[in-house]
Image (cartoon, rainbow, N blue to C red):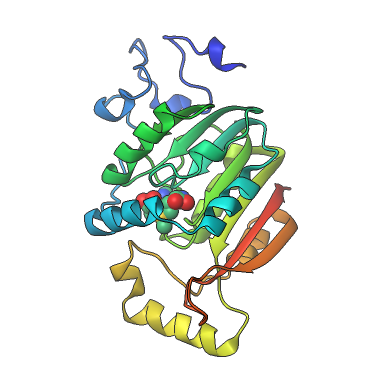
Length: 251
Ligand SMILES: C[S@@+](CC[C@H](N)C(=O)[O-])C[C@H]1O[C@@H](n2cnc3c(N)ncnc32)[C@H](O)[C@@H]1O
């Protein structure tokens, strides 16, 4: 179904039917967040300080991260769901072959910024409230999913991946760009230590020691391509320096 087929009486493609109250007018994009009948499970993610910090960091992100966003999304087409969209830093990188994007963002401050980014994007993007481990979407309703710097922050990574698998059609693609557990034992040790001591509390629930590619494979995806890259503006490896960028097929 093309974007132009979205009607005032049918739910936006990809949004779960259980969110539709019978006889209730579908709100236009952007009204969704003000309408309690249409709210998918209202999220409890509220990190006001981290949200402001991330918003600032997003505006000054290193050029190589910006380039990686472009590589992450290159060649995507059809119906896409992005989880934890933040301020919408990926939105400008979606290729014109994408039919529409449902961008799920639970944090209110970030979601407001994502709405603004969506309004200026070249492809149709609908920003909605929701959490990754309870996606407001029907089974098999997307061709592709995007997880970018978010699987570190979800409280239940296996639950989020199970949800991504559920909403992707068979053979659909998961694109991921995540900082991951280091392949250097000393750095991995320091990642585990900072996760225990303060990191998730200081940075919006972020964990540095997650082996996300392994979790993706364990969740029923076939990792088809993956590249490790070190993202750091200083010469020492930080707990969030090592990133994995890749794509996995929903089996
Ligand atoms: C480090 S930011 C990355 C934002 C964005 N993906 C980007 O690439 O700039 C982590 C994001 O994950 C979101 N997040 C945290 N917990 C989440 C959850 N349970 N479900 C979905 N998103 C979540 C945060 O609100 C935030 O937007």
